[in-house]
Length: 582
Image (cartoon, rainbow, N blue to C red):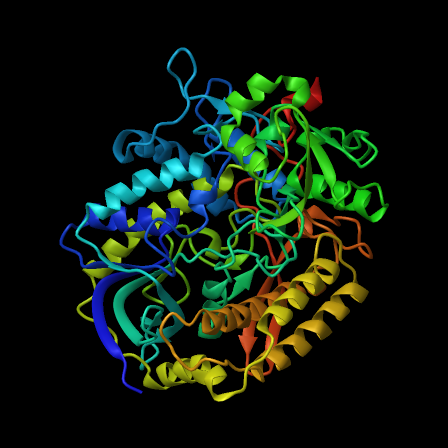
């Protein structure tokens, strides 16, 4: 099959915060570089960064410090984060927030004295979340998009990456095989440096926050390419996803953490506050604790009419709630709920994947020329991501990767020759459904989401994980035998549904395998048959690799190179909300 071939100095996959910041920094480092940005959707209109509501964690205020932010991140991550990555996040966030304001042009909310307003987010010992109302991500992405559009950068919109292509001689990355979704043509884009910044998106679960086009393609490609994935059992469920019922796609979208940080109540179906019975921090406990508490209320049958719990803000005053959270009030109103004056039904919703590709603080990976940033990466957050650390992660490491790629390309004389056999295999994999009869892809996706929710979800056990594994194997067999009714490649959304489901099944199997390997409970991963955390000093992270015989799982000791369990860089307790210590 004929494919189009292109060359660029730097190829960036993804146009969220990580991808756009990488492009900006690469062009600032060397304006003469040929930079190409490829996105599955439209530039700046796809990805998860623009969906960020809450804000951006950064140590700026008197009384706060980088050390305190770091300790909150380590303690919140249950001592699983790679400490040099977490430290880089906390240090560079200070630099990046100034850049966002003064160079990119973001307008964040301010106090009366002109300083940046920082609000409370759960699991932190200091109120450090910079924000733009409750629509922070839109502000960041819109301003970034304006900056990137002004660059001399090529754009490949509505291009789906389907395979990372190694060099023929094994010396590193050669390029990426893509499908132009508009006409179905295959394109190979060779890059001296390639950035994987596609985001992840745990949309394999019944309730999820990302849009349906987020299907973990980058992680699936990285696994096939031979990279190691770490912490893949750590899927974060946000406690308060809007529960709008089966007839709206709004179900699962986030009602941001600032609602609980501002003093919102969680109530069960009987109207009783229940969080104090699960954790001293109440509603301001970390996301994993609150999600499990809500799930426990649901399992006990103490639910709302649609099967969740309530969040209530009315006691704070309707005018104040409307002023502080205009986006959330409107979102709830669109689904028939009154957030400011009434109660809204919520349910835990799959939100973020702390696990991902193993990478270095400069953004490099084990494959020369291949870099990674954002939610495609593991190691920054460990077992639990603090709200507000996500968009900081994307912008911090996206900018670092842009600088690193510009420096890397400077030393590269030319492009690597691609391995043609991998290109042929990638096309064959994508073409497979056209050679088979049609089937019920929607039914397969529904079964996947229910099975992952039931068996590999908030609460896990050896028995549930075995059921989940068996179901995933069966679903994958069915998918590989399922074809398409329409043979046209142009804007064939059913074809891309098939490819989405293929990626989701691949990554779901990795999540289940990592969950089975971790026989203790940490943060977002809770084993009912191993409920204890275990010895922190012997903490290890899961590593998954793809071998000829299937998934290979190992446990790798965490290196405590800055602080060890039992030690602290601050004088008081990390991860404890101020209200919880009063």
